[in-house]
Length: 138
Image (cartoon, rainbow, N blue to C red; front, top):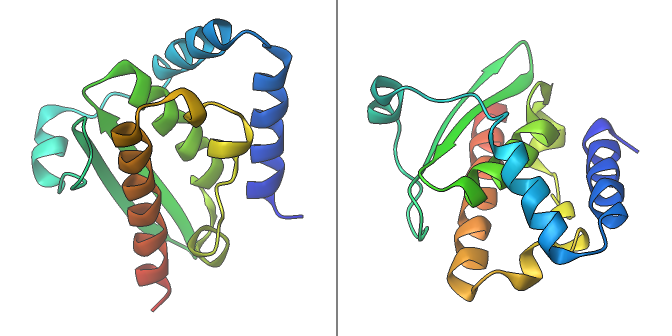
């Protein structure tokens, strides 16, 4: 099991302890405050992720064979998801990120109550992160 899987399993356990969906979303909103704020200048230098209902900006780089991600959104809910995704992939080996499943999004039960557009948008974010990691491997 790699570190990304271990982190995801921990996230799933954390949300499983909160049986009430309201408590889960309150926790997700609380986590959004831990995502570092990306300044306006940094956002302008990023391409927005296309297809998202919310505005989502990603900035990534590879250093010493590891993947580093900065992320921002204009909505608290998506910021919470970005915090968790970043927690999974930040500082991890490029190959692990490029092939990551990021199954916690579904296995935590969080996305099942999202609108179809939000689920689709998170799928675009996930795909873009994996694409960027794979591009760094080349």
